[in-house]
Image 1 (cartoon, rainbow, N blue to C red):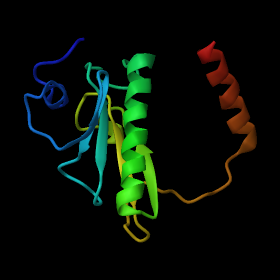
Image 2: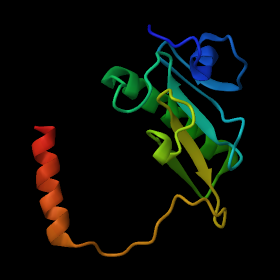
Image 3: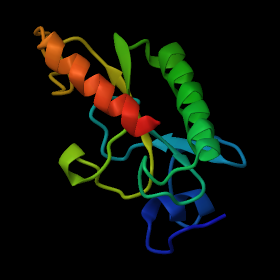
Length: 140
């Protein structure tokens, strides 16, 4: 299993750096974010190092999502938030601060003012359709 000796999440996965783990298996783990936006803010990561969505393989992504789902279920049962966001950021422009693929399990409360929600406004359907065709072609 590949890891990066300078990556804090690799150190957490290896048990070298301290964390508040709430779930772990052979492939992934979930632990409390020590800079939480809301109570219960948790991170799910693969044990192997992948910098982002573009690098992570499907097995590690599946394991990470499984850990995120288990964390979300526990958060729902214990904290009963108004909702939960699963957030996965890639690159500095998306506010990725640790370059190790991870999913935020983000409990939400009405009025918490997290700037993750956007207003709904109709898009240009012709432009959306044209872009969809270009993206389908890129997927292959």
